[in-house]
Length: 436
Image (cartoon, rainbow, N blue to C red; front, top):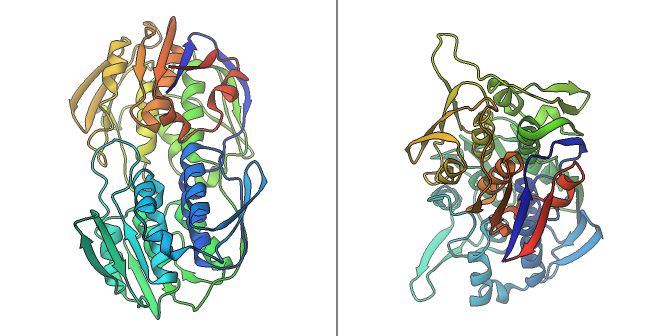
């Protein structure tokens, strides 16, 4: 196990470029299973979760060619169907959350898939009901194999239909879209997730020959086709990494430029930081965050305390609440954070409290932060990263703290952030990776 040693108190300055979007990468890489032709994906982040998914595709005999560090070609013209039903494959899928996105393409193209409960962040229950209900609407049959503790899903050919999703699940929507593109007839998905990464997936599939309309809305219409062909696709900048860099710049920045952020795809993320008083300048497609000796939390028009809550797109992504919460610890004023989607994601605040932050954890979903206005600097400490987003939030806290901190279990951070210590050290941070 590896750890970070962080010497806090060093101001960061300079320019940083966000990596490709992790969540989009997981979706579009799985989409390559839908065609026997080569599909080129560019700007793939070199991170643990994505690399593990690529390895899983290689294990099932997808031909993977690395064109450069972040560009790959995939060709699924000889998938090992026998291996897909093996215990080894099921075990590997269970260790990787992103593997759930393989179900739709495999079911659509090959008529069967085996499902084990996937791994990933320990942030509470993340149900797969939306995925399963969508496949069931399309005509799939489920059998539970108690001996292997897996679901076996089968469908000679899926059939298009109308469905109203029980929640706007991002991975559920992506999986159902990939299942429906080769189904017979027309599929209509209402209450579909519509975030930019879902839009990107739809654009790639249309370039591959799919017929998807309503892109960008919560009502998608998919006319099934017999086969898909090859295409080329470029992944968007990672909006969560952009938000993480805004947070770092606010807390410990001495002037930071975040380049090529694809501003039109950030939604309300910049405004969420502005509600905490963070100053953000827009220059072309770059964000410039000047040094912020003070930032003052807004209140609502009626004077009530500011509340930041997650919501499906175009609402605020839950993946950034941890970062926003840390930024609020050094703001002037108070703010209530309401994490609606995951019941364990706020439990990391006890580590911030140990560092001197003034936070009241009301319940598993709500926390009130009383900002220090930089009058009380956080204390360095030793902590463990429980998940990707809490890990980066703790790293930001350590960068601003007085003294030297240690963060263990940084494999969680590596799952979502490419070469994070090297990129931040180039801005002036003092982060060292060590073996625990």
